[in-house]
Amino acid sequence: MIEKLYELKQTQIDRKLMEKGQLMSQINAIETELAVTQAKINTTGVQPHGAISDFTILQIHKNTMKLHMSKLNAKKKNLDKKYEAVVNELVELQKESEQFNYILEEQKKEKMKALLAAEEEAASEYMQSKYIRG
Image (cartoon, rainbow, N blue to C red):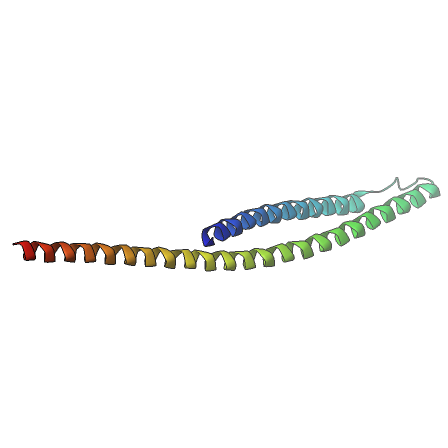
C-alpha cells in the first residue's frame, strides 16, 4: 500500500514538474514579447516634416502598444502566482514522497531483519539437531 502511495506521489511530482516547465515557458514567451513591444515603442517614429495626423496616429499606435504591454504584464503576474503555487505544491509532494520512501526503507529493513533472524534460527536448530544426533 505504501509503495503504491509512493508511486502516486512520484507521478504527481512528475506532472507538477511538467506544469512548472510549461508555466516557465509561457512566462519567458511573455517576457520576450514585452521586450519586442518595448523595442517597437522606442523605435517607432514618423518623418520629421510629416503631417500632424501622422503624429496622432503614431501616438494612438504607441498607446495601443502600451496597453498591450500592460495586459501582458498582468498576465505575467498571474502566471508568476501560478508558478509559485506549483512550486509550493511540488515541495509538499516531495516531502510526502520522502516520507513514504522512508517508510518503505524501514519496511525493507524490518523484512531483512526478520529474514536474518529466521535464517539464524534455522542455522541454530540445524546445529542443535546435529549435536543431538552426533
